[in-house]
Length: 309
Image 1 (cartoon, rainbow, N blue to C red):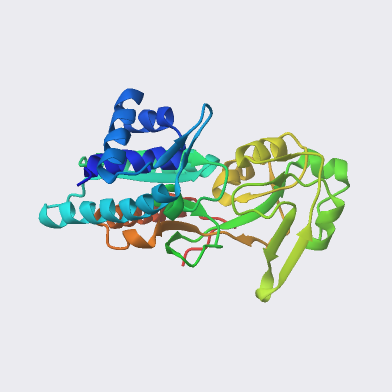
Image 2 (tube, rainbow, N blue to C red):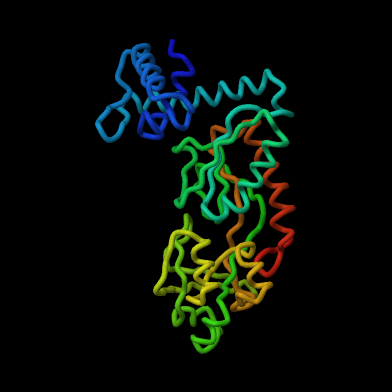
């Protein structure tokens, strides 16, 4: 029978499409990874990977083994949690991802506090500039901002959030004043951000009395990093649409000015997990901790962009 350790190594190689990348993630040598894959292929009697000089791809048999291995390893983790005292003290590796700016500023400190409270947990945290499918990419938990979530995933709202419009006074003076309606945004230099769930160049806004508006925006500057967009706004380069916690300090200091009061973009914070981890104790504990953390830290900055509900 194949070893569960070999199966775990194989799933990482398949996900990372390389032996060296898998070795780095697992904290072992590439030679060790090669040996474990060879033993697994011998045990199963079939090639699982196709190796070239540039990358590793999965064979048809490897695809089947990968799907079953993920399920088996998750069930093994659940078994260990069930027979151990892990409902109160979760143990094992938790694979978490989030977006660049939000992950660095908000999620990373929360994970640090999570591990301090639950020392049996180890966390591998990655920040990415794209929308992630945690079920397909091997993540246990994706902490994301944005309300569009695929139906095959489990999502729990961690905290309500709204994005707001703002710009530097210097830009507004140069542009002849602030926009008075969402439609006038198309006449301004807007700092377009392609970040995970953002449709590029389209700002969908909610306003007073349930009103909605869609603005097609353009400008000389665009980026895939929200913090870069905020810095450009501070430099007076245009209008930015960002979460309140990203701009609160600058607004309070007068470096940025809120625009179109009453108009915002809903973008709550969610914990997104694969269906197969619905009963995982370590995921359950992590999600509950993150919800409590965000309720206390993010809502402490509640302003025009956040509602206390």
